[in-house]
Length: 193
Image 1 (cartoon, rainbow, N blue to C red):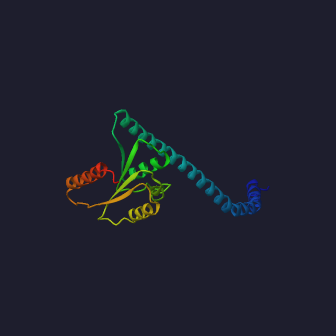
Image 2 (cartoon, rainbow, N blue to C red):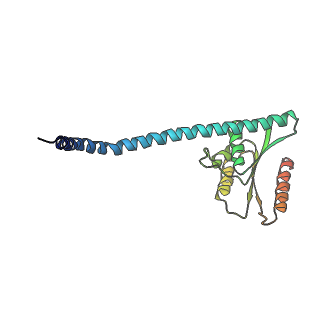
Image 3 (cartoon, rainbow, N blue to C red):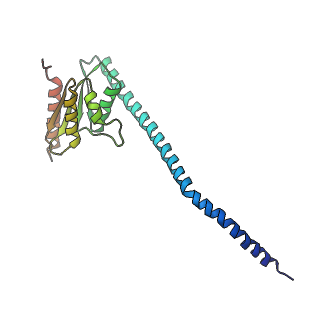
C-alpha cells in the first residue's frame, strides 16, 4: 500500500520549481519597485516638510504681527524688530515677505539660518527696504556675516550696517551691557543727512 505522505511531499517538491521562476522575476522587479517606493516616500516627505515649514512660518509671522499691533496700540514712537540667532532670520524674512510701514529698523544679533531654511538670509538681506544693523561677534570667524556685508554693498539699499562686538569670555554681564549699549546707540542715532 503506497503511503500518502510521500505523494504529498512529491507534490510539494513539484510545486517549488514552478514557483522559483516567479520568485526570480519578482526579485528582479523588486529593485525597481523598491526604488520607485523610495522616491515616492521621499517626495511625500519633502511635501510634508514643505507644509510644516509653511505652517511654522505662518505661526512666527502671526507672532511678529501681533507684537507690531501691540506696539501700535500702545502708541510706540518707533518700532524696531530685533532678532537674535535664528530670530534674525525670521525677522528679515517677515520684512521681505510682508512689508510693514510701522517698522522702521531691523536689528540682527548673531544672525544664523535655521536648518533647511529657504530663502537664505544672504538672499534676503539685499532686498530689505529698511535700515538694518547686523551685530556680529568678531572673535568667531563667520563667513556668512562677510557674505551678507558683501551682498548688501552690491545692492546699495537704504542702509545696511555691520557692527562688530567683542565676545567677553567669563563676564556675561559686561558682554550683555556692551550689546545693550551698542544696539541702543544704533537705534537712537540721528538720521544722517
